[in-house]
Image: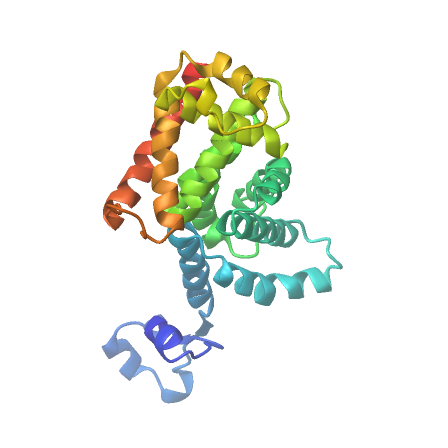
Length: 299
């Protein structure tokens, strides 16, 4: 049936099972008059539904694809909410989880950092809704989906409430790695690393000039560029960041290497000595792990 659903695009309306074994073994059944050979007819459609929910959550965990969860939520949850006028706790929680995750994933996929942060502001609500869904005593809609939703909950545990918003956003790069969203991972990692370092200096990370000056300062430190060769009209701001991070050469070198890989991707390899595709993917893991280490050392 799973093959038919995927390949032939069929819809399973019902699965019925005749529990003939209720009549005993074959000999007992044959001895029973035909008019008394009445076996229960069971509707086991829920087996297909469980399979659908488990597969949908698997798609999210492995690929960051939430389309199937959206479809199931609409078909299974919306009618319950309509009937109860939105008062069903479990159904509301499932819809809340799906809707919030959809917004967060879309923001990640398109590198909309402000949208990601807005989602993170309500991250506690997602976890609270998941608690409602995964609490077996509450989930009467389909208790068998509790375990798959617990796996989904584990995916969110990399984000800690006590982390700064900048650090939370950097940690979401792990999702990009898990989903093989390599270009998004590089973009989010470098931009959020800048934001984190700017905030550490007590400056506004959303100011374009602050971002430009910090990026220039980190590269000046690595390249040991003489002041007369600086290409900036904001030398004082650049000097501020140089004074702040001049003694953190490892951070500066790491930032430059991260930028080189990001530029290689963004220019589709149209550079001298383009980096091998597998190497770019592998190095994102290294950059992410090292960035977390560097952040811990700068706190």
